[in-house]
Amino acid sequence: MIDFSEGSERESITQLMIKMLELDAENKENAAQLERLHDEQRDDFYAKMVEMTGLSEEFVRFIDSPAGVEAAQKLTDNINHESFNINQWIPGINSYIEQTRTSYQDSFNSHYDAATGELNIRELYESFGLGGLYDQLEEFNRGFQMPPPEIIVPSPEVLAPTGEGREFSEHDSFIDAGTQALEELVCPELIAMWDHLSLDEKERVLDVITWRISELSGIPMHGILIENLGYGTNGENRGDGWMYMDINHMLNSSFKEVLDTLLHEARHEFQREVVRNPDRFPDVSPETKAAWAGNMPPQGVYISGEDDFYGYLNQPLEVDAREAAETMIDIYNDNNDAKLMSYEDIAIAEGYINKAAASWKK
Image (cartoon, rainbow, N blue to C red; front, side, top):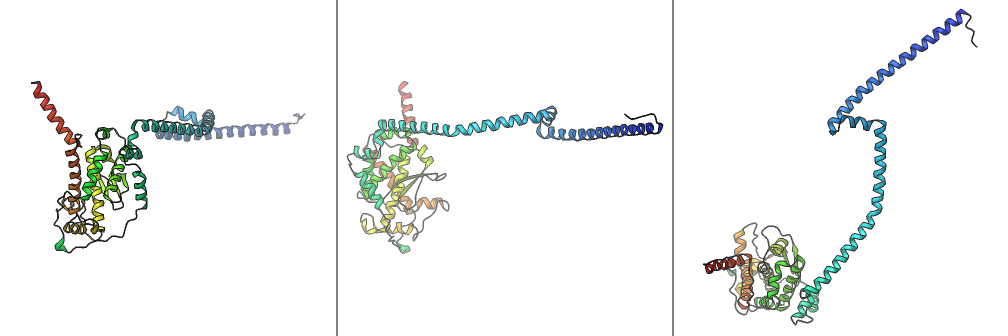
C-alpha cells in the first residue's frame, strides 16, 4: 500500500489525478466536437442523398446505420442466392421451350400437310399430271449457268422511241407460257384462299408458278425472294434469275396484284434473254430487240424511277413488262369463271351489287 502520510507524496498524487481528470474531460470535449462535426457533415450528406434519390431522410439515415448496412448485406446475399438458383433453372427452361416449340411445329406441319397437301410443291405438280417435272426443274435450275451476254448495241436511229413497248402477236412465246402456267396452276380454290395463306404459303405458290413459266418458256428462273424493297416498290428483277417481291406487297395485296408483279418481273427475265440470244426468239421483231437492248444496262441506258419517274414508266422495257403482265391476266380472266381481281375491283363490284340489291328491295 502507498503511504499517504507524507504530505509531499500525497500532494503529488493529488495533482497527478487532477491532471488526468482534466485530460479526460478535454478528450471527451474533443470527441464531442468531432461527433458534432461528423453529424453536420452527415446531415449535408443525407440532404444531398434525399435530393438526388427522392427517398425519405429517415430511410437514408437507416441505410447508413449499422442496422441498415446489415439489412443491405442480407438482401444482397438473398439476391445472389436467387440468381444462382435462376441460373440453374435456365437450361431446363430453355430445353422445355425448345421441346414445346418443336412439338408444336411438328403438329402444325402434320395438320398443314393433311389439310393443304395440294400446296406441297411436289404434290401440286403431281396433282396437275406433271409427274417428275419438279425434280427435272430443280436439276435444270441447279445446272444453269449464266451465259456471257451477247448484247446488241443499236445505232440511235434504230432505237424505239420512249414509251414504245410492243403489240403482242398470238405467237408471243412468253405470253403463251405465262398464260398456260396460270391456266394450269391458278384454280378457283387458290384464288379464294389467297388472303388466308401465310407468307410462307404464298411464297410456295409463287415459286411453283415461276418454275412452271420457266419450264414452258425455256427462260431459267429460280423462284422468288421476299425482301423489304421499300415504299413504292412491289418487285425487282436484278438479273440473277430471282424475282424479288416486297414483303408488304405480299402480305397486303390481292392475288391479282401480286401475280401482276410476278409476271412483270418474269417478263424482264425474258427481255434479258432476248437481248442475250436474239436468234432464239424469231417472234420478237428486230425493232423491239433493238429497243430493249438500248434500254438494258450495261450497254443500254435504263431510267431509274428515282431520277425520272415518268421516264421510268415510259421506257420500252417497263412498258412491255406492264403490258405483258396485264395481257396474261386478262387472257386468264377471259377464259375462266373465277376472276383474278384487285381489291379495288372487288370493292367496285360489291358497290354495284349493293346498289342493285337496294333497288330490288324498292
